Length: 280
Image 1: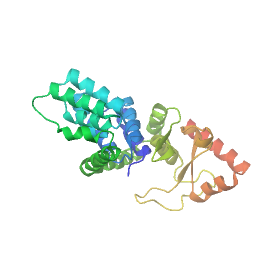
Image 2 (image 1 turned 45 degrees about the vertical axis):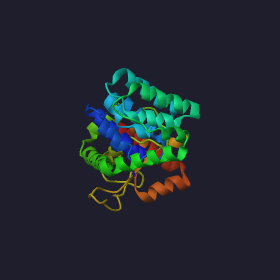
Image 3 (image 1 turned 120 degrees about the vertical axis):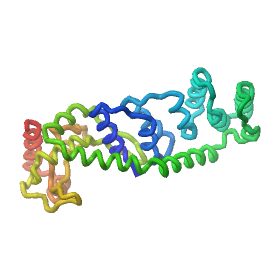
Image 4 (image 1 turned 90 degrees about the horizontal axis):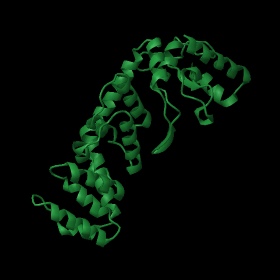
């Protein structure tokens, strides 16, 4: 299952390397969405990263579109620009109609403009069928997950490995260039977006030692790296920033200690450590 942070890792990496984002990348990323709101949120993130919408793109997402207004906008664009309009948008718009009269009007519009393909008139009787719209959405998600979802997971895992190989200086540069204002996004559950470069920077400059107790990490993770947890000195939930001057690497024990006790001496020490990290 993808998380919003997986998606941000993916987008930040591609933007940082000035690589072009395409529709296949997008379809990989939306292969686990739960609803149309999540789909639209991811679409906006990809558009910000340079994804270009167009005829071929719209042809690949019709079953995802669960808003009458959005569907009508796309259909109008296709009618104006495409040699052959995907009949799926007419079907989707009929299903999304709020009245039989509107559904009939769209059906008649299709008939008047198409001689090569047909839509059975029975769709008009299914207007406003939310269960059918949801089922089409679920089938589309399932198809994308089975055909592309594994690629996204593989992409993200490879990106994480590549990021881990960057020097502390390169991580610092990318962290500072890719950090934006704090984002809090509802994606199945509400979570804060984290910057992978910031996380990896904090882990790398720690040298494998807890920045509170200063002892070596208690064990290595599965890929042989010292296991430490990245902690935000000022919590994101309290307005803290996901930046290199607000993070430290802590052993699990000290991390829990900070959250449980919030001792003044400990908070002062990690704040100073975070500022030292930035100067490295």
